[in-house]
Length: 239
Ligand code: 13P
Image 1 (cartoon, rainbow, N blue to C red):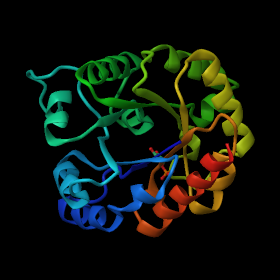
Image 2: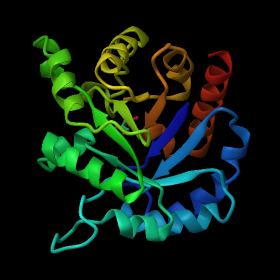
Image 3: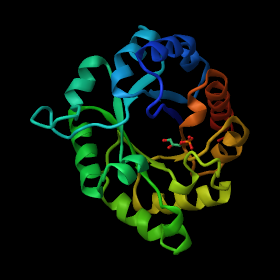
Image 4: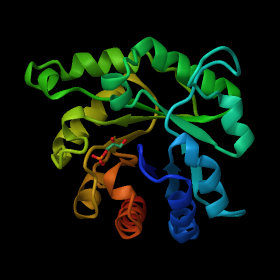
């Protein structure tokens, strides 16, 4: 079971350091559950410092380039992340796909470059509301998942775009159905993401093919993030 907090474009260095220091012991209280936080690039160093030596919480970036260096203005390489102590990266988040033109091909290259360099990867897939309504959910997932490499350090996050930041959570049945479908295509564990909160975490994480969560808004606040991690501990114990 993995619970990852995606801070998106929240928490500058000062706030990230303070928050990290508050949650630094959380990973010791979560048997069976790995805890990851994904700060913005500019706050990675401060987060690592706030967590300090020996914290069981791991730090991932929210994106990563595939080359180790080069003329790629605005990008950050896998080796730069590793040098800081960052252990992984999200790739293909729907906000990158929607607002920054991220393609399946780029997502594949980012994932492959990161894995080759030694990072872990959370690769995001998920259909939009229009695609779901048009009955295209499986076709979209099939196309997106087909671009992902198979690797022991890669996990998939199923994030239906219509459930992100909208307060609309996929029902546990919808999540389970999509996760089971993804697992027919790819051997990785599958996290659920989209309006995960303390109130719905237990029922989502109890689904047999839900292997954890990628949490946005509710990961920004200590009590809600800790409550979701506690629900994951229960779900891991019951599995
Ligand atoms: P919310 O939990 O805020 O809906 O965000 C989900 C998400 O996009 C995590 O990557």
